[in-house]
Image (cartoon, one colour):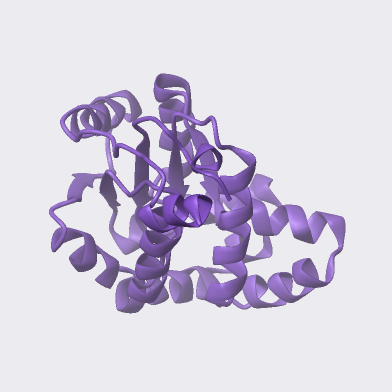
Length: 217
């Protein structure tokens, strides 16, 4: 692999964080338009596999219907493929990923292999009762069984609270964590997110030294 195969410009790589129903999808679409980013939603990637009826999709559907998480190696593999397909992107929004500290570490390693890094992690904070209300309402039109069963919704929120929320500490240790109230006017929340992004320099990218040595060898 040559250095030209890696990203060669500054990138806005953003982890948009929060429990299911916090509004990540809505804000992601606005951020994509504002910063010309590529949206990497593991949920969307998995649902595409489900729609195609692949073996991975069938396995993922069973887990998602039960409110469980898909194995890390599967998710990381999908993200790696997405990075390869979007080398000219101005940056990426990671929506719904990473969900665990182990995934965050794997994402850092994956991005480093491409000569880039996460610029900031923004968490949308919303209480459980509001989340349940939002997801049940969404379930009326989404067709997703995990949005139509209150017990499954509460289980997903519990998984977030007991496992995923620990990722905040991981990014806080890197001075990249920012928390926002996810309840309120969508435009005002968007403006606050943009302020955070604009005050965090995008990660400058270059070919890793190992890749350069490989080319010279």
